[in-house]
Length: 327
Ligand SMILES: CC(C)(COP(=O)(O)OP(=O)(O)OC[C@H]1O[C@@H](n2cnc3c(N)ncnc32)[C@H](O)[C@@H]1OP(=O)(O)O)[C@@H](O)C(=O)NCCC(=O)NCCS
Image (cartoon, rainbow, N blue to C red; front, side, top):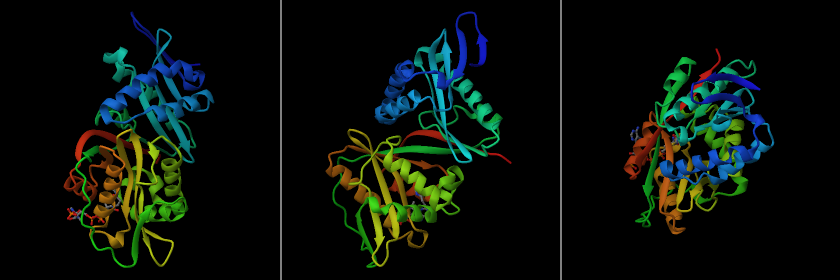
């Protein structure tokens, strides 16, 4: 089924429903995209690409493919989560380099038209991590989205040395992540992000149930790297099952760890606990022989950005988070 058809003198271009494509027909595109993830973000995208290929073969993923003379030149996909849709990724081949950005914009236009005309979809979120800040401003602005610039930061690990531990309050203890921490981690995330800018960007953070869905995606799926329980740490209250803070870390490359979550409950902030968790995580990564740590942070999240800069993280890339809410 053709969603649209436009002809140029040189190349015949179509935009087609993603569900008409078998994984094998998009494999070359994903291989090329995997190389870009490596170059731009030091990120091994192969597991994520494989997950996407598995979904493609089940023909259930909403999205579009742009073809040129019948050959796939780009794709976009999204996932539905209750009332909201998340645009997962958009990518067009460098063989159409001068046209790639236009192809990606056109794919996004089709996606937004589809999502905004779907009555059950009250909200659309997207963080197009691979694409530089501002690249799709026009498309998303025209469709009523708000923008939240974000920074991809990284730091080298090779000079990590054990640092002096701050004295932990006696009511807390620090330990590695356990599978049984799920429920308490969901609670501390929801508490930490109450009224926070990041819960404007990602509405999962607004409730414990949503935070559990976030955790589930991070811990169980390779979409954001391979979760590493050995370098993921929690600060636990001794007298209860509750957590005061967590740092979660995934492996995104053979030599790179990525912090997918860092939070401290509001009542315990500004006493060095955030720095402590991140320092311990970096030491654990260095002890495993890893060379780099990366993370993402919203530009407007000044406390976190300041902390990361003070700890030696540098910006490698900037991208946009974008949100649309139906009135
Ligand atoms: C970011 C967060 C984890 C920091 O936790 P924390 O325990 O307060 O952090 P720390 O006390 O270790 O350190 C905070 C650092 O920021 C500084 N800082 C504290 N408040 C600050 C402020 N209002 N403005 C600027 N800097 C501030 C401190 O001086 C400290 O720096 P230093 O260690 O070099 O002296 C915590 O604010 C949080 O949970 N925020 C909500 C979730 C979040 O934003 N997570 C990060 C997502 S990327």
